[in-house]
Length: 379
Ligand SMILES: Cc1ncc(COP(=O)(O)O)c(C=O)c1O
Image (cartoon, helix red, strand yellow):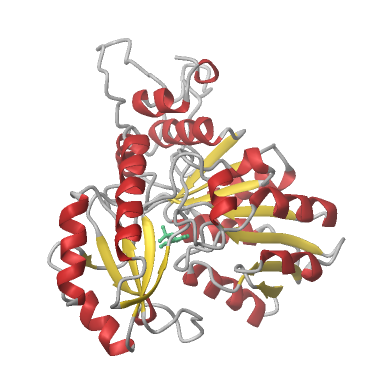
């Protein structure tokens, strides 16, 4: 199967269609070897030497992701944060970096740490008013702009194409954390981003059974070569078994995400205006401020992530989060099982997330069961 000839759904379903010529197996092999033999001339027999540099199953997963993202290449890491840290490691000393005020909190904690230690100069912008970004950019000085769309956990939508134009005119690179919008719905590189970044722990894998991160690049560059060297030198690479599980997970990405988007929309509509809820935050609702951009940018569904602001206080929100019977009270997102989380309880003290916010990751259960479960928890 040649990826350029086929639709992304086909690429994902067949994981690039690698039938093992020896056995005919339709499932890709799992290679766990850490080292690869050389031939009589002492040259490597294949294209691999040692698994910290590269290994076949990891490379296969990377090729699937690069094809789905429409990128030149992808590199997998042992977690999303390991991938993000490799990117920031490429920055010049004291580089100016811009990132959202609300984003995945641990990635922001990492940037704050780099700022505190003098490694970078960090400016935060209001992701709910992305038009303010233009004024914060320092042309010739800003090296990296990070955005996350939709932003975790308020699901604010940032216009990737508009941000890419700002980054380009300032000579900065744009990295989009698209964890909440996998390539079945958003392709940041096609919208002008330089890097697409995912916690592959979430939708890409989809089964809450591995930790992984991935960076995909639009075009080869010195920075990309540096990222690969950094992964090699720090050893943050993904293991073969996790890569194999990830390939398996990605084969159902499109149907999972479509169904999760449909169910999330049904839940959002049901609870919008509910007397026990102050606000439903979901980009699929026409009342959401980012809805028009999301409709343009999320072509395969608005996703399975939404948040509700429970009427009352922090204690009331925690009580609701621990009163569900189907939603599992746990962190993380993008799996087949629905999760509910009181977000302030897990984020750092610098968190700007409201006390009453409950984050919901919609799985593959029946929409009616999930709605009834939330109703009884709110009651
Ligand atoms: C949006 C987002 N980005 C990045 C990460 C970090 O990924 P990981 O937990 O795989 O390191 C997460 C984890 O929750 C996330 O939700």
